[in-house]
Amino acid sequence: VTSAGVRDSQLMQRVALQDREAMAEVYDRYAARVYGLCLRILEEAQLAEDMLQEVFVRVWQRAYQYEPSRGSLMTWLMGVARNTCIDQLRRQRVRPQALQQPDSLDALPFEEGLVDPDGDVPGQADMNARAALVRRALARLTPEQQLVIHLSYFRGLTRREIARNLQWPEGTVHTRARLALQNLRRHLDELGLEPSELE
Amino acid sequence: MNEHVHDLLALYALGGLEPDDLRQVEAHLERCYACWRRADGLLHLAGDVGASTPAIEPPVRLRAAVLERAVRTAAPVGRRSRAPSRRSPAAAQPVAVRLAGVHALATGVLAILVAVLMAWNYQLTAEFNTLRQQFRVQQAAVALISSPSTQALPLGGLGPAADSSGRAYVDPDSRNVVLIVQRLSPLEQGKTYQAWVISDGQAVPAGLFAVTRSGWGMTWLSAPSPPGSVIGVSVEPEGGSDQPSEVVLLSGS
Image (cartoon, rainbow over all chains, first blue to last red; front, side, top):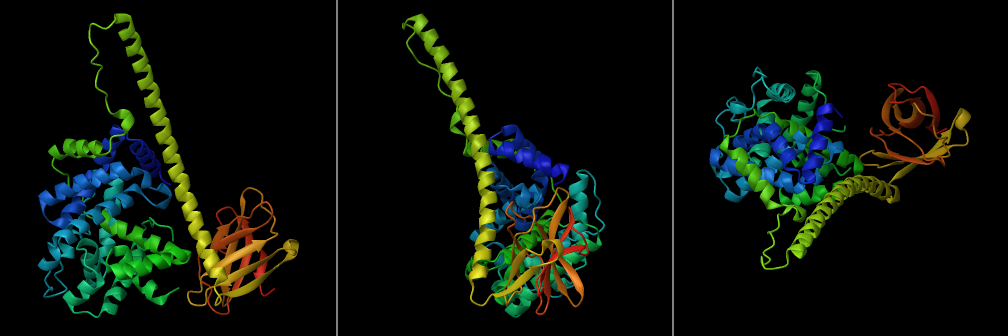
């Protein structure tokens, strides 16, 4: 566990004990990341702000559920944020209807904001550097693999919805999802990024 | 491993399963530790995808609102301020002073008690999570061992560990393995037991484990065992090795 991991673990322990200063510190450290993800998924500032609030309410209420041994606080927060936003998206059914089959896989919405292989890494150096490397690894995936990640993770579409929208066989959807994560891991290894998981 | 479930793990991690598939995958993960580990790894990878999104500073005005709302939703009982006493000023002053003192003392004791209980609760939750994970591992191992289709490979002790023995339980579909050993000597500090899957003359590291004082140990191998492979156990320096050095147990021996 890194020293940042130890700090985060202690911080979350304090949050679980209802320490407001610790909560403020978690917010200051991670709000920009959470808000970035909320905006990316919801594409609407007001909704993203609402969901940012919702995410931090959950952090306050469920801090005791965070298990440092299972991964970084960033990963946990991203999971909470993603699920909160996708629940909202599915409730409102805003995005699925807006989805259009792309004319060409060369012009994916996925690449608009996420894939920025040469993006600068100022400020919170570690997190930004890691994020930039992950973006670079994502950019190396095939357009089909990027698309399946985009639609499932960032748009909350299910396998059958993706198959229906893109007119891919269902088996193709999960094969491309599997290859996408498999290749992502390989590219991360090649870029020298320590995997943040158990395997 | 259920092939269908294996195919769905990536979409499970990306949050792209329909409720029926989700239920099927989660039911499988409850009883298959190898798949659970795989899914856990993929979930972390999906977390990296989320964290790769560029950070965007939220409007400054949100900070106070977010923190206020979060904290307001679940304020612990012990920290709620209590309304001041509205006793009549006509009440005897010494009694009021005494009551105020008792009240302050009681509030302080209560606050300390609440803090202690919450710390205790946090610790118990952490222990519970650890035990739950251990239980999950054991439960999955029991399910594999008791399955009629599971293959059991005996392991025999070698050299100084000649009295030791073991058994590798192999799932015929996934080739995942639960290894149980007995009468292996507990190791001195700085050393560890390491499991291996040996196939076509190549030894693949399959995880580190320790044994109890009575020499009993159980572990899920981190590498599948292809048909015809051999399972081995060696003694290695802490942290494990790339190749086995002192082999003490081997299947087929």
